[in-house]
Image 1: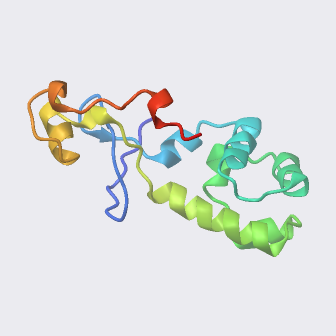
Image 2: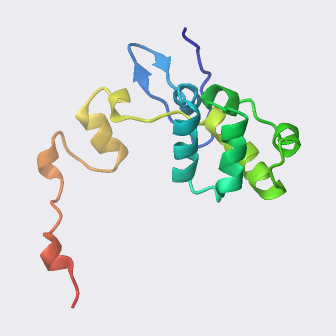
Image 3: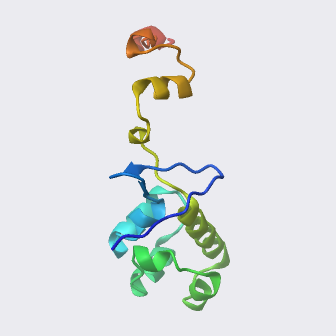
Length: 137
């Protein structure tokens, strides 16, 4: 099953996979089961507590369901207002974001140019000093 995503311009990026297909963050989240979704939400630092996570578990929300969440559903299931608003906002952001990888660049020169490094190879990139030289005691 393949879906086509339309590019989103505000702070979005895209990954080219096997040609011109764009993979969105939502496409990735759709694959999550309930446990993986909760783990992912914990990593995002949304301030969900055990009660909020238990609502997601009790309702058996997986990644695909997550992308359809609306405030009314979460409130109906007993989630407090703060977490409800954060989750709904996060759902919207997930639908809009595209995944980014350097594979979208055609050459190393493109990557170097994007980051303001003038040259045709990595030989022109300054090396970082060893950590021991950076420490301040």
